[in-house]
Amino acid sequence: MGQLGSMGYILLMFAVMYFFMIMPQQKKAKKEKEFESNLKVGDKIVTKSGLYGKVSELAETTVVIETMSGKLKMERSAISLEMSAALNKKA
Image 1 (cartoon, rainbow, N blue to C red):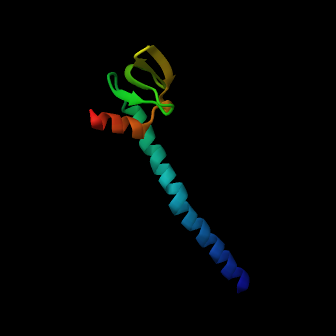
Image 2: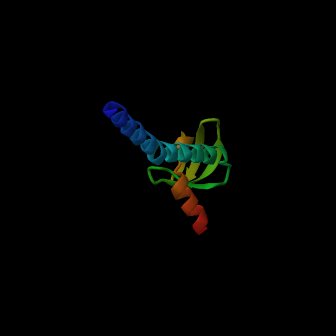
Image 3: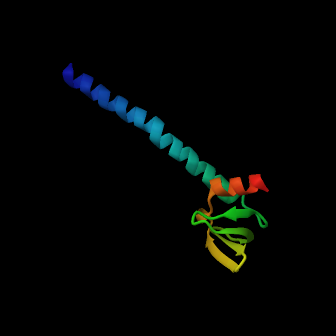
């Protein structure tokens, strides 16, 4: 009975960890993927490294952004969902 009880606590711990750590991360990843697929030319964005720009070209996995100094080609995944949303909310 003692082993069964301790095994139950371990399973409960993993279930709690799943609901508090893994599920929110999966939701965030899904939201970011949706954001990346909804990008369009002319959107103002901020990259995860802090570069501000405007989308000028789109490819399947890459994006070309126009900055004050020129154009940069980067991965869509390098665009920050939170900072871009905050930038567009201010404007």
